[in-house]
Length: 251
Image (cartoon, rainbow, N blue to C red; front, side, top):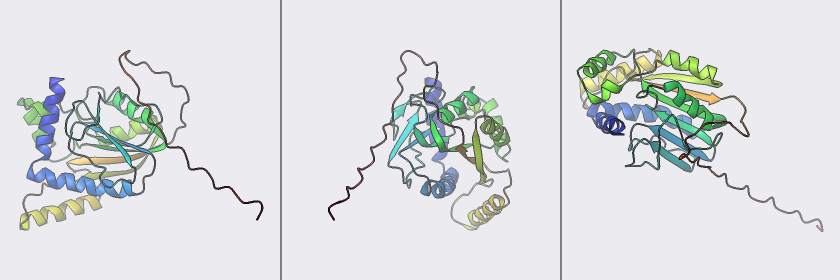
């Protein structure tokens, strides 16, 4: 638990830096149009932060924020490879660095696939191991930095293979901001121009990648799944549809 807490604190601190605030804004700008066309009853964001909600403009009313530790906007506390959520019950899942700090990324991805409804949408955000700054992160990890020491990023191409095997059809792959944006001056404008150019050409150099996928397999009625005895699956209820108006036969 202390290790999870360290990762949460360090990642939140990293996102509070000036350069990464621009990165979070760019990420929100990519996710927002996808959420505008996403409909359903339930949205779930999971990851290693507690104040980085990416669903502010979602049309889905019930949004839950899950993290390994309580605090901030978190409404559910659980580990990512054992989600306390019913199978086929969530319409949109945002996995914000959920695969980056685990030794079992494939198990986490299986859990995300399990809780999604048929044709539900999955948005996976992760650190790009091919970005220009990946080497710096690796060196800082070797030097003992608590965040980068635990980082084990899943490459986007490897992730696409896993998604296909799990019956998730990839809709898009985006790379975000290979060049950090600092301040508001001329250098910042050049950096923003370079980032737009890189994103337009889909160059695999961004600091982050974002994969959008849709679950194409059918739902399961009675899934067989081993859970710890203390675990309790949360049933996300769906509102009953309104009754149809009665016709006046006398008329």
